[in-house]
Amino acid sequence: MAANRRPTARSAKRTAQPRPAGYVRAPEYQRGAKEALERLYPGVEVKTEWYPFLGESRDMYWPVVDVAVGPFATHQKFGSRYTELMKETRPFIQSLIEIHNTNVKALGRDEFANFRVLSEFNENARCLFCIEIEESGSRKHCLGNLVNASALGRIGILLARNEKVLRIFVRQRAYFKFLAEVQKNTFRTVNALILTTGQFDECLREHVAALSMDGE
Image 1 (cartoon, rainbow, N blue to C red):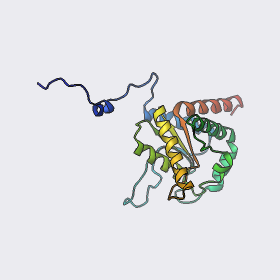
Image 2 (image 1 turned 90 degrees about the vertical axis):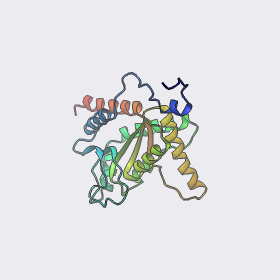
Image 3 (image 1 turned 30 degrees about the vertical axis):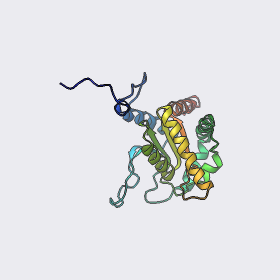
Image 4 (image 1 turned 135 degrees about the vertical axis):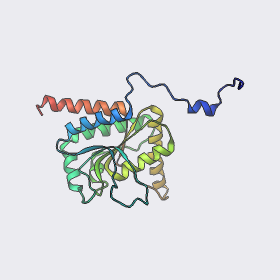
């Protein structure tokens, strides 16, 4: 029989963290977000587990996006259409921007977002919103999500399922800005908005409810 041993720091780190009350597993969360976004963007395709490079060569990395709002620019560009959709739903997008800016400020950073920059950035995006959901706390996973969301979406939305992930996203976004400021090779992420899943849910509820009040 093996001797009883106290757990090491490494094994403790691997121990699964308890889920908060009302925790929703990722596939269910994705479905709920998809349904709400379909209400906000009627007639626009919304997908979960979206493959943005389906049909391309398989000898490169293929990301899989948690939730994406189209139209999907896999064979043609939709830059002007993305701008139209942003203007049509500006109150919703502005609420996301305000929460992002609050989160950034609370962590002592100044990488703020604004609507004008978002509406003019990444015109060759593959979707309107590229939404990545993260809770593992792995810095490598977070970094990949940040790059994918920013590269593929006119607006990248990073949803942190806990405060640790939120801090990681904000610091990584700040890191890319710092690299640009000191003239190092970098990647621009000014179109990436960082929220918690709870904050995103509240925005969706508020603006879907407004549609109901307007009779839509």
